[in-house]
Image 1 (cartoon, chains in turn brown, yellow):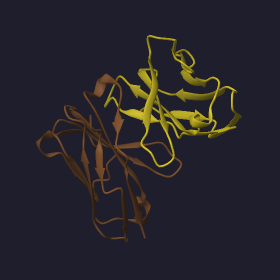
Image 2 (tube, rainbow over the protein chains, first blue to last red):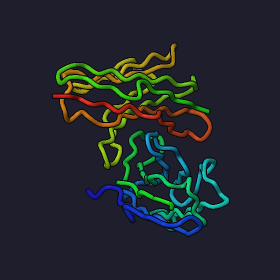
Image 3 (cartoon, each protein chain N blue to C red):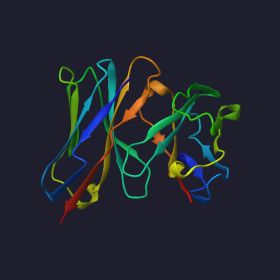
Image 4 (spheres, one colour):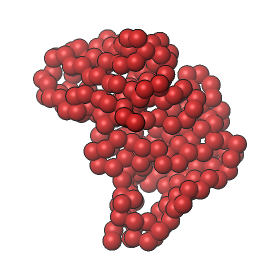
Amino acid sequence: EAGVVQSPRYKIIEKKQPVAFWCNPISGHNTLYWYRQNLGQGPELLIRYENEEAVDDSQLPKDRFSAERLKGVDSTLKIQPAELGDSAVYLCASSFEWHTGELFFGEGSRLTVL
Amino acid sequence: GENVEQHPSTLSVQEGDSAVIKCTYSDSASNYFPWYKQELGKRPQLIIDIRSNVGEKKDQRIAVTLNKTAKHFSLHITETQPEDSAVYFCAGRSSGGYNKLIFGAGTRLAVHP
């Protein structure tokens, strides 16, 4: 069974440029999460989707971050414009349902903003 | 909301020794506590979890204990091996609000041969 797939794995951009990350969750998983992991820290939730509905985006900086999950499958996370402090690993995860426990993470997209 | 603190931030042990990582949580309504292992440059992967109706759970060389009264839980690894070297994250999920999984800051475990 294929795991959570993310792309790109690495992205280097200059500040004020836009960037987008893509995630394909495990087939059949209704819940999709975007986490941000700063160096030496644990993952922090940015947004959680139940199918195509964003049910928790309280930690998403909405002035520059946006996300979508069309048709309740793949998802994209966009940052526009990027700032130096956005440098981090952006992890996508999925689970069958939010209350079933295990999150399956992707390999992450490492963003460096210069 | 939930806050999870994890100690120590780094842990160094000799192969064969035991390792213990401790976490405390703030929300007494939290009912699910997983542990994730993240090897260098890899994705976090679940290694064990415990729910609030259980005090201890074991899986081969790893075990997790939960003390609801004190609001802390611990990961125990026995007979450590070099391949146990990784960053370990604890997490807690509240049963209220957004049911958000909050992660600790992580413990970097180094097992020396």
